[in-house]
Length: 286
Image (spheres, rainbow, N blue to C red):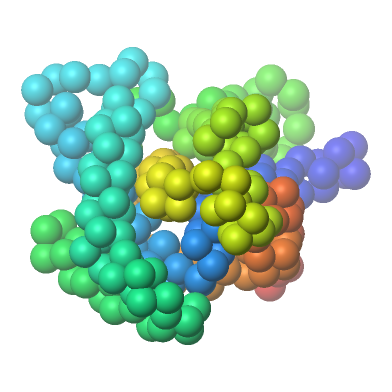
């Protein structure tokens, strides 16, 4: 019985939060690794892209809540997510047209793109804090737990309780769906195959008639979907605070690097490695 209680405690404080956090990092790392693999630079604006996408979801969610529009036991933010993704797509395509395209036409070195992305980071961060402020913002509603610790104790008669939040379950399910759709797109569609060909050999892809600007556009659209989804899921599970997403950039990049930059499968694996490392060390310290 003591061994079972110990396992439940481990699941409650390490396994469940680790899987949820790993799913969030995996989605974030996928966006970073796609930009690196296809556009060939490290996008330091990715964290604040997540912040802006999540901010738009927060504002839209507040609007839905104000008019009494809810999603039963699930967070209303799920209704806002598609609109937030559209906002982020427009934002990234606009940024590419106004900023990155100029340097792409000049055939600037990757380090120039990195420095430019840092500038974009500060602009995005300033816009986010100007619109929504720098404090924690709550936009979570619906049922809080799939199962609470008290309910689990009553059901099992164990001393330790296992709590699974709705946002944790939602994060894992959403991440699985998004990753499955992404890999289907990259491996089964003509556009996805063009992206992979462009990533493997740019010169050969151009000789094959692949339109590079179309590849770039599709890449930013996918990155917008991944960044917004990851940002909203993280905000629901933890809390929404703009500067947190800038700090989240470090574990996201660590996830992408651990898995091998430019490798989508590695980015997913790296996300869980970093997440469980963080959660386990925190649990052991406490």
